[in-house]
Amino acid sequence: MSSDEKRQDLKRLLSYMRPYKGSLIAAFLLLIGATAAEMVGPIIIKYFIDEHLVPKKFDKNIIIGLFTAYLVIHIVKVILTYFNLLQFQNIAFKIVQDIRVQVYQDVQRLSLGFFERTPIGSIVSRITNDTEAIKDFFVSVLSTFVKNIVFLVGIIISMFILNVKLAAFCLVLLPIIYTIMAMYRKKSSVFYAEIRNQLSQLNAKLNESLQGMSVIQVFRQEKRLRKEFEEVNERHYKAGRKNLSLDALFLRPATDLVYMFALILILSFFGINALNSPVEIGVIYAFVSYVERFFEPVNEMMMKLSLFQQALVSSSRVFDLMDEKDLAPLQKGEKNPVVVEGEIQFNNVTFSYDGKRNVLKDISFTVSPGQTVAFVGHTGSGKSTIMNLLMRFYDIQKGEILIDGVNLQQFQEQEIRKNIGLVLQDAFLFAGTVKQNIRMYDETITDEDIVQAAAFVQADSFISQLPGGYNTEVVERGATFSSGQRQLITFARTIAANPKILVLDEATANIDTETEEAIQTALSRMRKGRTTIAIAHRLSTIQDADQIFVLHDGCIVEQGNHQELLTKQGLYYNMYLLQNRGSTVREKVSGE
Image (tube, rainbow, N blue to C red; front, side, top):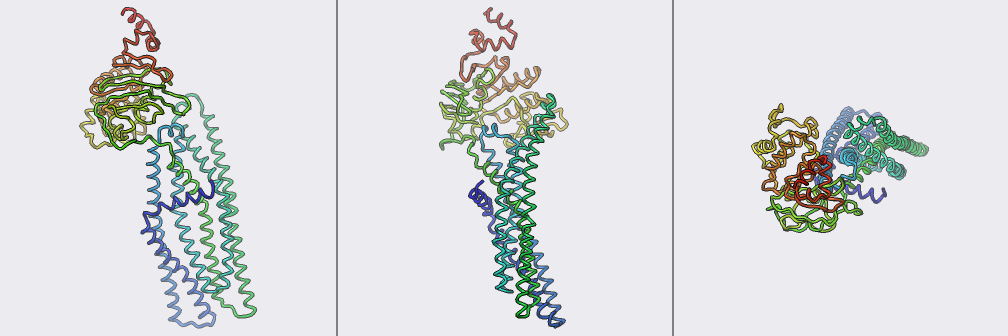
């Protein structure tokens, strides 16, 4: 990560402060007031020492006045500091909230291809751990740096008021301190980048292990996975240990050494001057006090540099995610057509996921409104890719896809999603209630619509028996339901949305035979008046389709209805033969 990239990331981070200019100005004014109150304290004590303590002039009223002034100024400083920090913290949390919402929103716009090739744990790490580091930057680092820089300026001004010559000498400390901070930043940035990378790997490994725990236990892979996790954890530890060594050298010892040098400089200056002229003890006290206070913010900023470095590294990772160019396909044109009939056409469609191997090759077919077509074929033949392209999860490289004679690319994403109901093999339920999972937060769907949809797919019988009925809480991914029950709920979800086109991707694959019969009955009613595309491995589920397309190696090699394809005794016939042990098919075909 180059210096220019760091500056750009820092500039981009600070740009999130623009909407809060008014609040920042108020916080800055409070900070200046608190700093001014802090600077006045040593001057009052200096005045007391030189004008009253040394000459032994103890005027009661003046002493009480000085004590009262010192106490009031200290109380004012405490109050201003409290409201200053409160204001800064409030702004910081709002900024981090804005960043988190934006990065989550940007992630939602990414293509499915990005999620397929990027470990989910790594993405989660960026949205959680890295934004947390950015939060530390705004909440802790930025407010500390602003406060302490203003504080240092106040100290330098106070030093010049006391003694211009000595204050000029003390300015020599600034480049020394800056050099220490720059060296620390340069060296630690490498270590923090490695730490964040290894933390991302840890999250990815942990996410994979938790999701695949049943497989790990069945195949007794606990030892192997534990060893892999330990290896990643060890790399994370080593990166952290290197950074700890750097912290131990730069964060305190180096600045303490400069502090000792500053004390020697001040005492030597006053000691030499004392040989020629009297030295005011109050001035010595004030200077030593200011130097001590000078290094308090320096040490505080040095301690925050580690968080600053983490924030820069994390911001780079978050901004990379936000700037990811692999976006979901966008609408082309401004006409905003609508889906009316639901006719689907694929005209000479060719598609590749990686740009090297074509998954679909010059595919053409038409699905008339209200017609049901099915796609069958061996694994990898391109069945699910047709679904992905119709849902416009990907853009095609060649050819065109039309709905009602209009190019799919011209439709708004919302129009496509609203009119195409998708049911996947792996039924996905969200945390919430059964009712919320069916409604999917579409407030136009009433409770009555939900019950009717559930009854339509014969899910009402088991939902009504749940402890809370439709208000029963669903745990993550619906783990407490059977696979068949989860699928029935997703069927109800699809029916409740009332789409014009249905896409069923192995929709009955995880359902038992008895449930499948009920589902097939419901599907027959669902398909009436709707264009339906069914993707299936089990040929028994699509025998009543109006048209069946057989895919092989990305091409349509056969098409026709169930009986026509059996009569051809081609690839479809062989697939059906394998699934039905052959005898029934031979007898049926030969008899015809």
